[in-house]
Image (cartoon, rainbow, N blue to C red):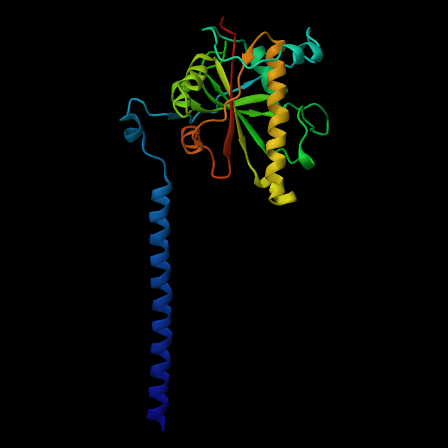
Length: 264
């Protein structure tokens, strides 16, 4: 009888040990898998990145610029700007000022009240748009890609260096490409659709594009008031723009507005 009990205890102990071993082995396998996935997600090393002379330099700095306060009392009336607004496709090789950039970005999506309401209406105040400035020739600002932060009215660099040529190459025509290369700045619209669809379902996608129209028209009118010109571009490769700008997975590029002094 005692022998049987001893055998049962032995079998039970073996079973427990085997179970513990399986749990440990499984954890080790999962840990290795996670480490492999982590390696896949890591960006290329500096050595690999610099191997290509045309590689884009992801900014590791905290370079940012507080923009000048926007002017809310301009010299040109809304009616005048509406009557003269046109799409302009040729730009002079001339820089714009930091004040002009400030005015353009504020017109696009700037804060206009203590409630954080903005220059463009938004369905449910969900504000799905993310606005970037591809800067090549703005006085007092280093070339690069910058994200506009409306609440602080500032821009933060995400990519250093002039990427106008690369952005132009993502478009579907030589005319569009030349506009982006020649313009001192291209205002780039992206959208995080989930901010609006999370409240309104798939119908929210329509609201995002409506909001884009409101904001882009503001840029058109502000450019006109500043003596500048712009032309909206929607014909580009979403995949290529997303890759070039290193956008997050939930951001989608939807509009490009090169802005500059009109040529001819």
